[in-house]
Length: 275
Ligand code: MG
Ligand code: MG
Image (tube, rainbow, N blue to C red; front, side, top):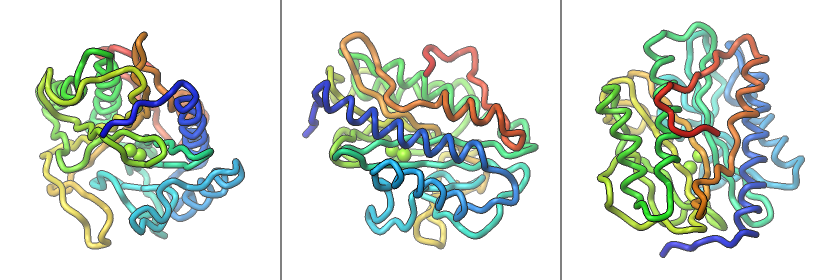
């Protein structure tokens, strides 16, 4: 069953999402080759707890950390480790918080140092596909319109592989609520989008084939062909006057602009909306 949120509930989810983005902004300011996932995880957890909130992922189905950190062929659900990031790594960082009874959820993929141009393009296209998906999240459309927008742009236009096994989701008092929000689909199919629907849209896109598998740590999802993968996520509310992006990547990107160790991920011209 889909639970549509009130204006008050949407504002509380926004606050939780903004805290997530504050944590990701903190990460954006310090991440560099030589640092470890465990180090940035500790920092993000402290920042969230300092705001009278708790990490949204820690303990969720037994996940042991505040951040999901997925490096290079890592798609999502990576566990922070003691292994140092290297120059040329792409590091997807997904963060959740639980504050005032509501979850927030957002993710960003950081390009450390000298990243291969074909991988930078994957990041740009994946980020752009997120905004194309958001632009389809309008009253009167259906969930399939969002997935179609992401898939068509990533696969048909750019030749990448869109991951099928993992999807976006509704969220609110629970981290994962109905409906599922696949990054693939057919136009005009699936649940109708109505005012008050809050969903996380989160394209997971592989440079190579779409197939993934679980790594030996029991958590990290990696691309089967071990080629790089990218992940960008916003939480949004469907409103009568259009999609309202509750999370905020702008603050993350302002921190990236000041961090010489991280490359900016530009939006492609084919983006139809920004946030
Ligand atoms: Mg997330
Ligand atoms: Mg999510």
